Length: 221
Length: 278
Image 1 (spheres, each protein chain N blue to C red):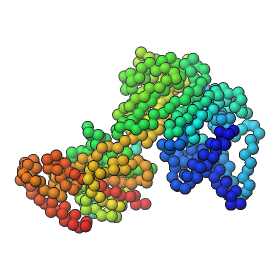
Image 2: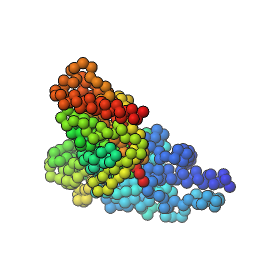
Image 3: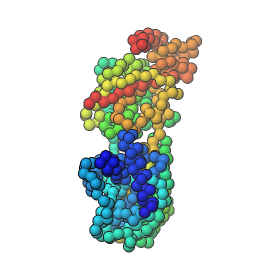
Image 4: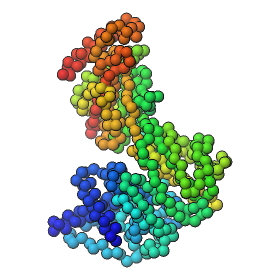
């Protein structure tokens, strides 16, 4: 019995794999019959009388332009951390001329990496950054991030008016060459929020901080 | 038969791995190929047989199936009328599709330039693109002569012939795309908005028939090709630095005394913060 159940499970898993369910979890198979695990023996895979039936259920979509394009993401517009006195507008940004994330000069404006996830995305890290200071504008609100602690609540408002709440998991100061940018900008994995600014020591000749301050936060359900 | 048995075993083994790992396999799995199928033959609902087995039942024009993860190997594909009892009298094929591990393919059933049904296996470019960019692939699978593809009114691709493709890398964003007979700018398809999404291969097919006036665009997207920005430069004044300038040059950059006061205050503040954290 146990062996049969195992075989049936393996068969079901193989079918699920072939249907592509693993990459499109919403398309549960409706035409593939998976017997209950205790109803042995498994049905013999005899070919049915015509018309034939597909053995796997391949996910199929319309390829029409209006139905199969990458959908736009809901931009975050405001960020608040009441306990740190942070209350800032957010601009969507891309890259600067050097291939780095391009932030507004004004440290009272936060920037969202618009090519990555947003708080409304199903997966991945929303990256919001701001200058810590400026020769023109003085010290910015994100200077307070270094004093955030685990559990500090962050509220991000998306353009649909919805408040998305996060709790700080960690605050780290990492030298810039050691920051794992691929994981900071990760578009997979659980939905989460990553706040970035500069901090640590300053190179007074190159006029650049040597570290990034990185706040990782998880959604509060 | 021998081949399909082998496929079945590999699939269960992979399935077991997936079940154990609890995660969906990444699209870059080294042992499998990804295959999508596009139906680009107007007015003909079909069945698709892979290695003699019915795989796509009642597949309608304009639909895109997959991606299927398949162990590397050569697959025989036959496309029949939708009421066929088996693959013995295909409308297209049978054709052999050699699929290599780690690659991503789209098999398109479509019309050739003269309007005869055929099938073409395209290899999709899934190499990474630079941050901020998207890849646009345009494939001519329509019963039509050579075409130009216009992006925002200007010819971006010229003299593209059935069944060829052209691949561009563009700054991510929406373009207004149109297709015109080569050397002309009068659209036979479009203009239509195409989102060249960042880190994505947006594959646009011109399909249908010029003489039957049913030319159309189809689109397929493959995401996850993105690169990360190189960094986040987020400070320029040193006002919250944990160190002080050596010598006088740095402090003079600001050029005014107020700044020095700010530096001192910030350093004290940050030291307190740092002390509090430790």
